[in-house]
Length: 523
Image (tube, rainbow, N blue to C red; front, side, top):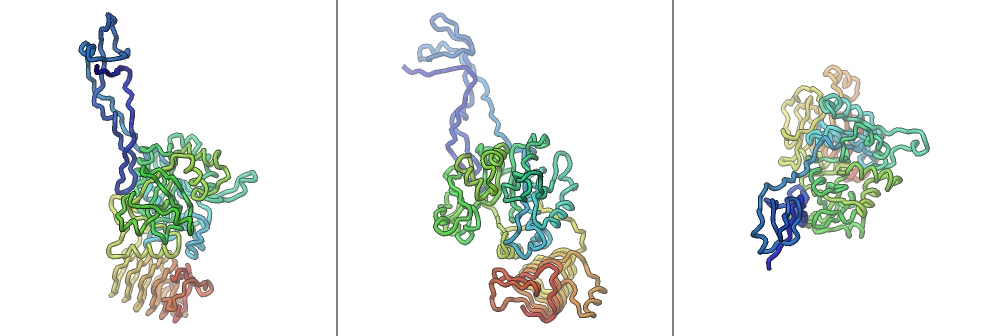
């Protein structure tokens, strides 16, 4: 006898989440299959069994081949279950303004890391800010502490009151402050502590519609649609999602490393491991879509420092679970991996952490390559910065190869090769610039002012006649005289010469902001 069970109570669909897809940009969440594919459900109108009338809405215990013929079947259209969509209105972004900036010193001697110039005319803070705007996220907090004056000024001029703050959107700078009580006397003790000190903002009535929080770093170069990131976060019902990227052996110790299972669930997290601890975090990255050749070059999966949190989960972690933990990477995330649903979103596009002088220098010069891996030029997802309304650059009889020349520059009979020249830069006749990042100037000097300075034996802003500069970073408003040679011919790796206006870091000469390098100087 063939038999089946039937009911006309509301259809309960069981979902078997057994399939995962790995797209070009990472784990995109589970595909749903199984009973959810049913197109119709059955409704009983009435049936007579043993003289008893069974009304619609009452379950029938056993259906057999004999009584099946007596049933009156009706079909109805299947109940549609719509996928929950990520809504940027329910997301708030928190951009960490950086610590003391020790790794980027001396560029951070007077300015916060996110305020350092990148790509000729942008600031590092423009990267996460623009990604937020392009993703539709208009509730943004920026946490600042060290050397924050120029950063605060840039944010105020560029983003506050220029459209993003209209409607329910806002950009707020949250500076480190002291409050009454013993604990309130301390400045930010780490990334998690910085967020904890302002956690009351996310319990405020204005934050009632915020369901998820996005934690971002201010010292990275990448282009990312954060709402795709959050769609992945929602699809997999994650408490926390970490954006991750494959990295090589030489970089692995600079990041938090993760191990994930075939479904993208993070099983282990280790913050900046070294030696055998680092070796233990090595994985087969072909499982996340890399070719065997790519996997050999990048056998680690690193956290990018881009985190998605359910708001209630983050508040619970900071206030209740780990009230004394101060850092996300070394304390909060490793502990949460053991207790929460922490997922990985594998980001396969260009991403570069530029928290050191070497990585900052290399990432900038890579922008000047003939076929760069990353470009600021994209009409659909542009990067924003403060509009300076400068005139076009004037170039007089120069030879320029693989270079980026910013607005408002004066180049006269010079050679520029594989370099970036920042705004308002002045290069005089005979200058040779190679593999150099020149950040430019904040003000112009007129021809009359320049002539007067030269007549009195002083050095104007810019680079003087017949100077030769290679493998160098020239900070803003530097004054380099004529017949100067900067090339680190002896290959010095590290040197501190602040009294002479420069440092050497990883073999790269860094000319200090407002430094004066006199005529005929050889470095």
